[in-house]
Length: 406
Image 1 (cartoon, rainbow, N blue to C red):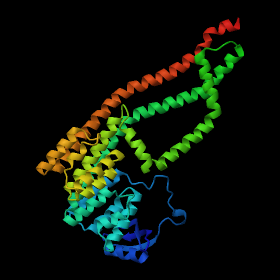
Image 2 (image 1 turned 90 degrees about the vertical axis):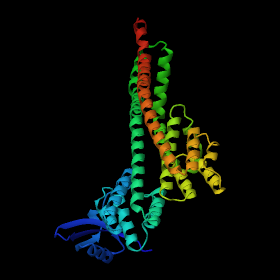
Image 3 (image 1 turned 180 degrees about the horizontal axis):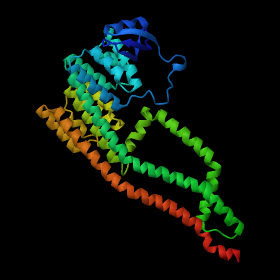
Image 4 (image 1 turned 120 degrees about the horizontal axis):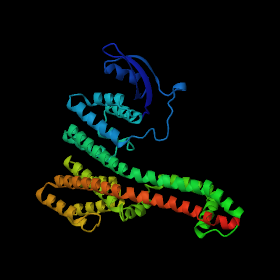
């Protein structure tokens, strides 16, 4: 398969206006033909990113966020419902999207579609941008002839996921900021303030109180071990970012996450909301049940749910019900198994899954609000206790300074 190259072009449109942009094509001739087919008069075409015009890429600049996919899906559905052809809609999306990485991928998808590939096949060539859920739903929409409806469902799903993530991030922002400030304050006092007091106390002689001696020992240890701690911390962070998605790491970390005393229930509710929402949407779109269970298990974000989904697949493959295996997995509350049983009996399983998802979305919102109201005073108390304890330990010897001077 020939590789495509990103080109910069300047054309004059049907109204005589100069238009510039970037698109991928197999060669310049293919891009010129494509631009002429769109009603443009090409003036110049040249490879992008050459010489001084080379684009500077920062780490993470090529990332496509879920919000970008949600906006793209809704715009895509609107264009198709307005009567635009698939190729024309892809070209417009590639030109107008703000995310350069997504624009580049959409250009490549447009080229593949122009070459005769289906939309889902073209999207499947970019698994790092388009998640399996979106690819399979697009395939179902193409086969069933309801691509517009599928894209709207994908947009709704991604927007709900973005809203959920934003709610969690806003709830966790305050405790994280307070925790970082506490760490910086403690490190700053141990490295810069405690040594000054320690030198003053040493010149006076005498026995320091136990809290002060502990603080001096911690300060001396941090000054000696600070480079080692910094290197180990950076190496640990890099290793975690690299290996956190490894199956063996997830097999240990994910079960522990849902067993945490305060945040465990929140993590479980988030995973259940994502799982039921994705499964209900795929079943409503006509994706086969076994394929749906495999996909939503991998996208649930927790290995515990992934293993439970595999158990559900085996049950469905044997011809049994979906609700029965749920009782063997503690992550599924009795309400979920009972609602799925009712959905199977009434033939409205996708509706029940949607209701379960909405319930857990509300539960996540209520839980995050409760945690926020609880964590704020706790973090203030913890920060005040740490800083206040250090200050008291530093000023305790001052009470005996006059005795040492005499």
